[in-house]
Image 1 (spheres, rainbow, N blue to C red):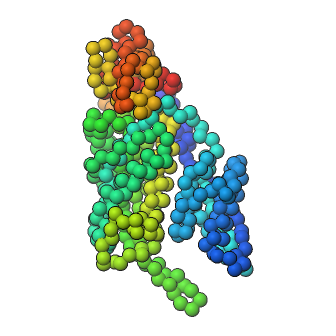
Image 2 (cartoon, rainbow, N blue to C red):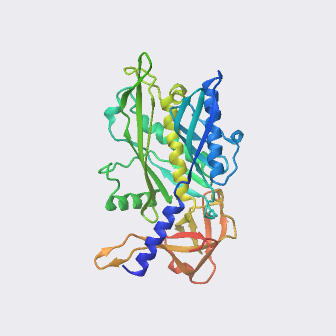
Image 3 (spheres, rainbow, N blue to C red):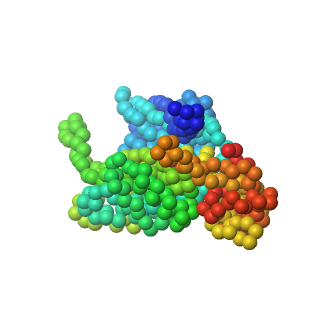
Length: 391
């Protein structure tokens, strides 16, 4: 193994550590004493999350915590406020009139990176339903379309410096269980890069939508409920480097409160406010947090889309944070052969190739070489990055 390969492996390991969750555990107890159990449970969960934040070295009071879907099963997803990003109830127990709750909370103690200067653009392709037969009960055949749209809304509303764009196109995997294969990955990357020019693309597969019954023993009876699963697998692709930077599965389940025979209106708030609808929304929120982790520290690249008489046009503009006078560096995608094997491409900074933004609009900018002759090595589909970003 040569020194370049060793360094790449080390850097990949460092990046994986940088994007991992920061889970801390907490516990709280509260007496019920004739009070409303739901209200006591919510406050106990908040206190348990506060305990977890204290263990993480952060100080977050229960009054600062806003819970979303707290009474849906045992899963809790919360709107991020400050360092507190999400939480999950691990166990609940009532003994001698006292409720005990154990939680784990994802608390961002230190971001560990500097945000890039320019905003990022992400394509959200249509999520594919792996087994359409599972959608027959409730006639949820269009659930992929609705999940995709809500995923886009989650990304745009919760992630800074990101513009998530929905496309009416899906990408079927040859084998949804094994994920993308290298030739397939390259084909999709090349197509998306040239068709849209976005650095990132999100693919999704709904892998499980099945129903099942759950029976709980009570003192004098048994309680049987119909529940439904929701499992998705997402793939976040960097089309410029032709690399999957996030591949993750998410599972949720909740009570199915609708008839097994009648169709469900996926446009209705009645569905999305149900236990199952909220479980889907919470799952997508969870995925959005992981997507944010995967891209927030990565370099933001613009792509050269056309030449001008004196320079080039790039596909980032004022809406992405570009300003007149900004200095950009030229980058090229490079692949190398090791024997007969072609390596995966990487993006390489080109020395002495600075360009200056001389004019712009909302979506594009015109750049001009700072040094005479710098433009001779630039081509359409090459990449530009802020000179402030380290290479």
